Amino acid sequence: MINRKKFLQQTALSVAASVSIPLFSKASPTAASSKNESKLKVGIAGYTFAHFDVEKSIDMMKRLDVHYLSLKDFHLPINSDDAKIKSVMS
Image (cartoon, rainbow, N blue to C red; front, side, top):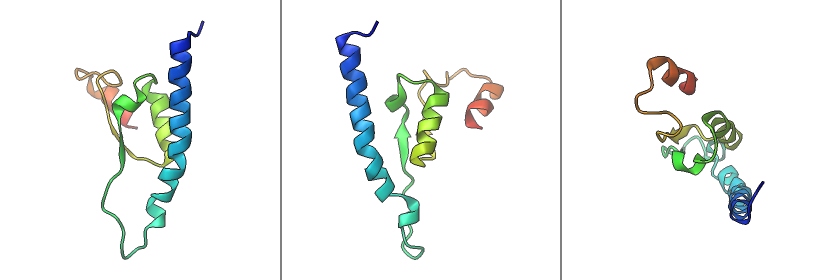
């Protein structure tokens, strides 16, 4: 059962995502000219995806064409083994 607080949080997140998508499309690397290409690498803070698992977070990033994520320990625990790290990085 969804409560009022959860509903408002999900609605606010959906509105924020809907509003930000056009902003990202205007700032896409393809919009930069070859002479004046930006060296700024755009990423997303891991806390943005606190309520999503890592696979869902990566899917959303791919839709936005964002390639950098600052992972938080709730997505990838600090004591993860090499196999787990490689599976998330792939």
